[in-house]
Image (cartoon, rainbow, N blue to C red):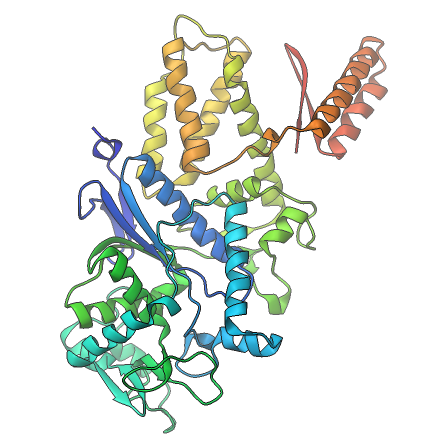
Length: 494
C-alpha cells in the first residue's frame, strides 16, 4: 500500500474557502501547475517564498508516493506594465533601457531565477514551459473562445467579453467578487479604448510599431495577453481538468479569475479542483518595495550586504525561517526572526548529527510511532510546516534526554525514529546542513578550536574563570558556539 493511501490530506481550497479532503483525479497521479516568474528582473524574496511553499508541497506529495507532474511556467513575453491591457511590455522596456535584445533580458533573469532556486535547494519542476514557446497554442485557444462567442476582435486586438460570459457563468467565482461591484468601481472608458467594457481583458494585442516582441496571427502582428499563457500551457501539459493550481495571493484576481473564465469559455468546464494561494512576504512590518528601500534580494541574505540584516545567513537558515510560517500566513521578514531561526536550525542540525552516537537500550520511553504520525498529521493538515517543525523539536528534546541518560530508545524504534527525522528534515522540508562541507580549512579550524577548548579546560581547572569565559565569549563573537556536556565540550559554527 502506498503512503498516500494511508494518509488523508486536507487542502485549503481558495475556490470553496475551506479545507477539503484531497483526492486526485487519477489515483496515484497529481497534476500541479504554479504560475512562474516574469523574467525581466532579479527574482525577489516574495517570489521565492511562494515557490518554496509549492516546492515543499511537491516534495511531500512525492514522498507519499504520488507520481507528480509539476508544471511551472516562465513568462517571457506579453506581460504589460501593471498587468493592464495598455502600456509597455516589461521585458521590452528592460531591453530598451539596457540597449539589448529582449531575449537577452529573458536569458539573464531566467538564469538568475534558476541559480537562486538551486541555492535554496528547490527541486526542478517536471516541465518548465515558456510563453514564447506556446504562441501557436495560445492563438488556437483564442480562436476557440471567439467561435464560442465569448470574445470579440477590434482593430487587430481580441478581447474577452466578461459581461457576456457572466450571463451564463460566474465571473468572480474564485475571488468572490461580483461583476456589478466591479462595474460600479470602474471608471468610464475614455473613448480611446477598443474594449466594449472596462472589465474585458485582452486575449491578443495588436503590436504598436515600436513594440519589439511580436508574432503573426489571424488578427494582427501582436502578442498574447498575460492571462492566456497559463491557460494554454496548463491544459496542454495537464489536460482540461487537473488537480492543483497554485500561485501567490496577488494572482487570485484578476489573473486566476481570468484563467477560469478562459477555460470555461473554451472547454466548457472548470479547469482545476484545488486552487492554492501562498500569502505575501513583508519586511519589518511593512510592504517590501524598492521605492522605499524596504527591500532585500536573496543574494543579500547570503552575503549580509544589506542594511536590514546584521550578518549573513545560509540559504538553509533562510529556508527554515520561511517554513516556520504557514504558507497561507503573512510572513514578516526581520533580522531578529532570522537570528532566532538560525539558533533553531543549528539546534536541529546538531541533534541530527547526534543520532548515530545515541546509546540504544532494550526499551523505549517515547512513543515513536505516535510521534511519527504527528509529523504526517501536520503535513496532512494543509501542509502545516510550522507544526511539523514543532514536532521535530520534540524529537530534538528526546535526543537530548537520551544523551543525558533520562530517556531510552530500542534498536527497532531507533531505525523508525532516525528515518522519520531524515525524511522530514531533508526530503520534505528540503533543508541542508551547511556544516557538512568538510575540507582542509575546516579540519584546520577544528584543530584550532579543539586547542582552545583544551586551554579553556586548563583555565577552569586552575579556577581562572576570567580566561575561561574570555575564550568562550570571543569564540562566540566569530560564530563558534561551545557546548559543555557530560561527555566534555563540543562546538558548532553559526
